[in-house]
Length: 589
Image (cartoon, rainbow, N blue to C red; front, side, top):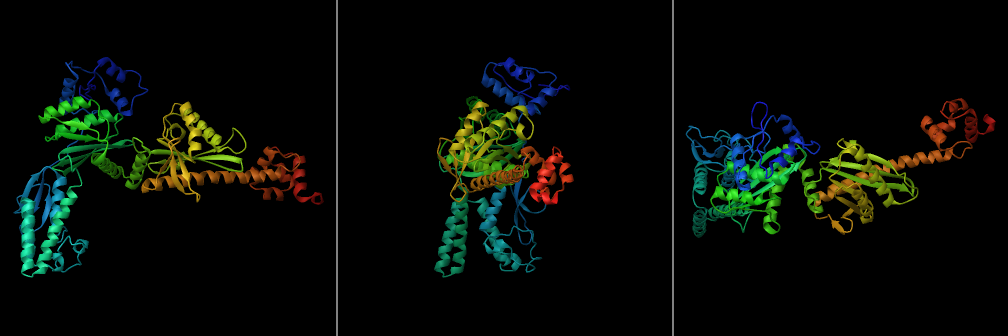
């Protein structure tokens, strides 16, 4: 697809060209925002015929890499080279550097992975208790108190003068040997030195060797956070919230995480297609393709993509969607990281994101419910029946979308019928206001205050409107606290184990209860006041309501003169006299 200047703005492939082109130039009713922008910029298009779907995929990948069109999903490779810098003057320090300079320092590298470089420096400084602060020695010795790293044995605190220059240099030399040598050999040498010091009864030195051995082993344990069974693989997870998405790629080699990358993009409409494009784009920037790629969901053209990656890697590459065990946990970890990074990028609370993720996992939803609607019924012994609807957007109350309902379909007490009436009226409004804020927006999740009865009463309403919205009830215990979630015929789901999700659901349940009860009390108070006025001869519901509206209270009506009462619309002089006599008697006529 080309714009008016002849620039290529989109490249795609199709089994049937006519069908694919019709998607763009036919009706725009089902077009996404991105597709509408694309179509608005297309001036002309070219096509190339090939002999197979695989050949089309190869050509598509090649042309996208060559032209980098605006409307294709593209990953920006912002990688540079990284170095480990060792200052050779005075009290040497080990740090990460973005470029190699001619400044007399020693540089290890270059390394392509910033994650690996920073992790290596953090590890080695922690093991050998080297400072990572900006203090300059000997200038800053004994000028300030030691920081927390000293107290948790992550730094020997040269700033306090507690370590000599000679001993400090020995630690730096040992750290450099650790980074450039064999970890196994270093551990053997440390054990030998520890036993030798112990035999000489130099127990203080032996304890230092012991602590260093423990620190190295502890780091090794942390690094095997990962894959115990599959030693070499990449894990992809794509988190999408509203208009933004984040891809996290975790790379493992020899069972160790050696790279952790994040890429941000617009929220893709088609996730399977997006995963395919992202994998192609990623391996167009990276030479090393592992024998296994784990993903968090379906991938379009998976078999063709496996064939493409196998050809690039010159060995078989398998794309898998883990279903159980360690591999599922790895994918969840990857997705959790993507969500957290996305929350930071969008300036949102990562706690809210994590709560929504937990809730989605708990309820078996494909993605986090960003827009949640909750409903509750309130009445007094079947009188003044009302309902409240609250909305939580991104895990927080969205008060501009709150709605109140007066139950109109019947009188008396029937919570199930009330809930069904409210949801019917809500989705009737949706049909009239599609695409607008409030009633024109469909929720990602509906939570009803109540158990399976309420869920079963509302489910037919969703079916009537052909809506597939996840629907659950919030069950309370005897103390009116959230106890579980009801799925309607699927039993109750305990939420105690998911602390963030439990807190979110409890907050929603308390808020919808507060909102509906507040409306009911207001309505009930008004109806009670009106009822006392209707005892007066000639005053019905409408006139009573008009009086309360005008005077704001029955007490004010009681104090009003006949002339003041006559000012109320619909109140005749005869009505005014009756009201006055009712409250004040004929003697004051």
